[in-house]
Length: 257
Image 1 (cartoon, rainbow, N blue to C red):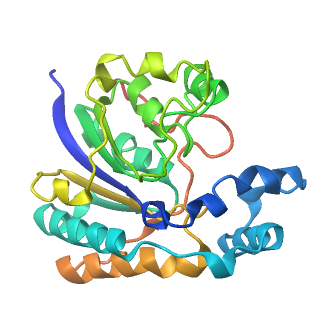
Image 2: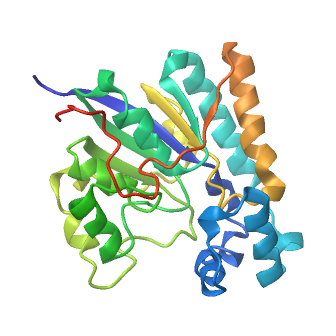
Image 3: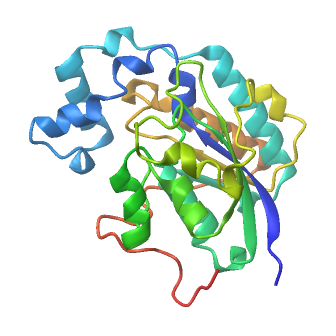
């Protein structure tokens, strides 16, 4: 059976943190170096630890124009698609629960338009290998997971000017991989407003706790509330990691792509 092509608007709220995100973008490893496990911390505990390490909280600021652009685009798309095609997640890998965890989408192929400070293809050899070896996905490699499971048609990354561009790591093969057919038309769309006239089938929005400061959590909840008020439906937030900590795929049993 031929695949049905669907357009997916994927939004990571860390996109709006462009003005100050580099103050804390690499703090995760510093927390681990202290012998702590960030995955076992609450949202508040994580950001309290960042404050203890860096003292940056008072300097953090977001881009109001970017937030407004995301809001305008999200409300437009949400008003044009069925409510069941809208999904909210705590972390970005829960987009896979939305797209791959639903047996009704087994014959669908996706064009992903990802508005995000990070590209999330993969950032080192281990993250790439985890997909091959264990079919394991996380926030850093969910795009590659879609590619390897033959669910990705094209991927467009709408980035910030100060985002680190792929391939990031010398010798990790990412640039060669971008020559694959799924990535042939990979590109950066300079402004979110360029997407206003595009038709989407699905809308996914994540908070991204490691990159949206706790003090700005209302940016995510506020956008969610506006969408709920616009279409008259309440949404839950998926708080689970797609593969959890055991490295097992969460495709439904018996699913063949």
